[in-house]
Length: 494
Image (cartoon, rainbow, N blue to C red; front, side, top):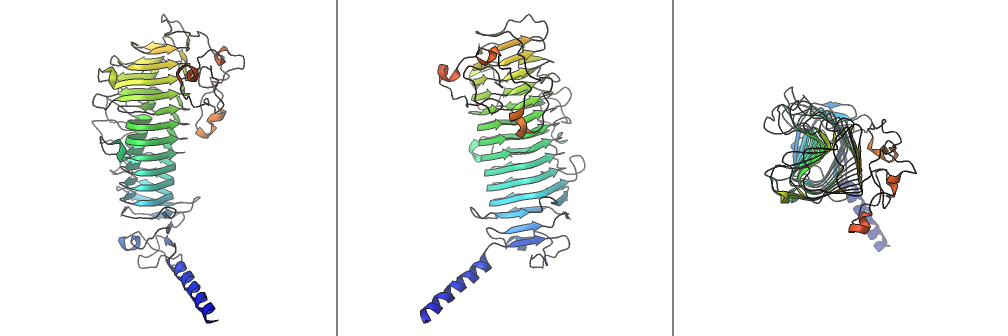
């Protein structure tokens, strides 16, 4: 009997210790006090250093629903554990607001396994005194930011710097300056920022940074100096219209000096640039991008090109990139892009812009060309297969010098003297189901997008070349709408 009691006592002590030392929930309220214990009846007022020091893996900090905290927080060296992150949250349907004025909302550095969710961050405005980003994550790993509304910051709504294993989901970044979402690493080190997943985010009306006078601003979602980045089911619109300079400009969703980037199931529409400036496009694989893909994306009514393929002078080599199963509608007429796909190489070296595989895209442009080349656009190994190119008049703006074209549809909506490029072309106007009803704003509805679907009897369903059979390419297996891709199909929607 004595042994049984002893064992029972040990178990009870273990349970008691577990209950005491297990994860806790702390509460914050503007009516609280930092001398309180953080319970729901005695909440903290702020996240001062003493309160932050109490946080352990698995703990939750709950901001009182609907309250407005006139605060700005810098948090350093905060560590949860795998499966037990430290969570900062509020009511999903009535989130707390962090009103940080001229400062940043929250800065998290040198930390790991932290989750920030269900909060609204508001700065004083890009033109009204704020000089900071909204939510900043630096030199950290295994961080999740989820269901955040971020507005009123001069720099980026969400900025991630030199961090790894980051997930950003359901971020609404709007009315900021430099960009809605920015992910960057150390210049010249693509591995300094890696394993980034951005999904279901919206970057809208981020017009430009009034202090950025020597480079672009007003981007939607931008990734640089990074490796292994996935951007999907996200939207960029109405960005870039107040960039305070002329010259190179912003783009809706794009990457530079990055490797293994996938942009898919995204929509970029009505993005802009400063009058007289460049860019203002939908999507872009820019200088130094390698081994990357844009697929299953929709771009329409952007001032710049729907899809930019660019190499600036100081960038590392650009190579082995894929543009497939995308749609562009009426892009590129209102800036110097002049076409839906725009190619530029400032290096004068074709080996610095090479090996791009452009296939099964649908380009429909009532206002300009299908493809545009800068006077400096020399490249090598650019391949165009099974695309639909429909242009206002001429198919190409500028001089095409080295591309390989085969089994594309070329059709001019008015008179052109240009001869379609390449071999095995079809000069027919596809009988699209409803191309005049091309506007859509929800990426999750792209599988049901019918504007450029082909009728069952279309010769385009069998007029292309089998890229897997001919070259051994893995083409992904599905078309723009997520249906099995036809082995000899032309265009994005089959």
